[in-house]
Image (cartoon, rainbow, N blue to C red; front, side, top):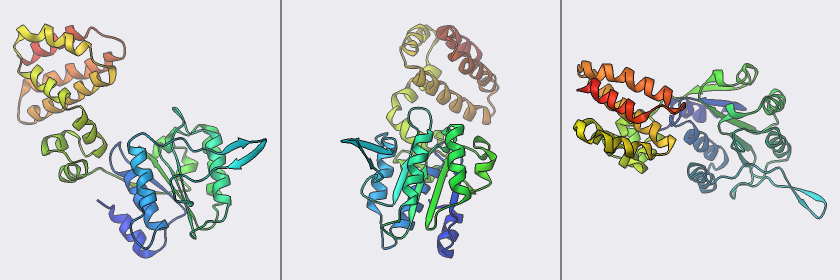
Amino acid sequence: MEHPFLKKLLSSGRVPHALLFYGREGSGKTYAAFKLAGRLLCKDGPCRPVEELREALEKGELEPFTVYEEKEGRKSFLYLMGEHPDLAVVVPSGSYVKIDQIRGIKEFVSRRPVTGRKVVIIDDAHAMTRQAANALLKTLEEPPPDTHFILTAPSKSALLPTIVSRTFPVEFKGFTDEEVARLAGVEPELAKLARGSVKRAKLLKEKRTLLEAVKTFLNAPKARLYTLAQEFEKLETEDKRLFLELLEALLEEQAKKGSEKAARALETVSLFKEGLARGVNAPLWLFKLKEVLS
């Protein structure tokens, strides 16, 4: 799926020097950022180096942007990521995008492009520290010629207003169930549960056993609850949260069809999710849920 605004933008030939792609996780904003970068840098056809970087990012194999490398007392600037000399991709180093990464980008864009223009993608731009954001702001205020910045974030409010004011914001509202199924390679049921997120659909594909566990819980007699609760306790925290999110999604479907029990159970699931980080008694909550649904 290509965002309708991007089609118009590319056909007009006037691409702003800085764009902000925002939307919930998995809404396609990062995918679109790489697609736009490929169109800007490789006008004659598919841009394989850019696609390779996108695939590396999806797999979690993209290393944080490196500024300099010390060799024999000399600083060598490292700006190549993948095989395209005019594309730099910034991802959080740990939990944050740090000022040294932005300094490296400023050095990168100060050099003459090899192919006529440069593109910088800052994925999860909301993870910038305040120092990093202020450093980027100075570059956005006086952008180098033939350079395009593409920032991604979950919302405009997640960034400094001064950063947002110097970008052209484009909202991504997520994919349809049919698009999710096609792009993630999943069946309609998983696509629907992904709620417009390709990333989430791929995760559900990997964690299919959790969905089966949720269905088992919903259909299990009370006599099996203790065993199921023990299995739940063995899950990693993230898998426990995903279990509850899937349970919530299935209950929402039942509630939409008029099930009052499912509607009441949703309140219990919500409280369970809130207490998960505090280490609540999971077996007790699962028993409570089953009581509500009985």
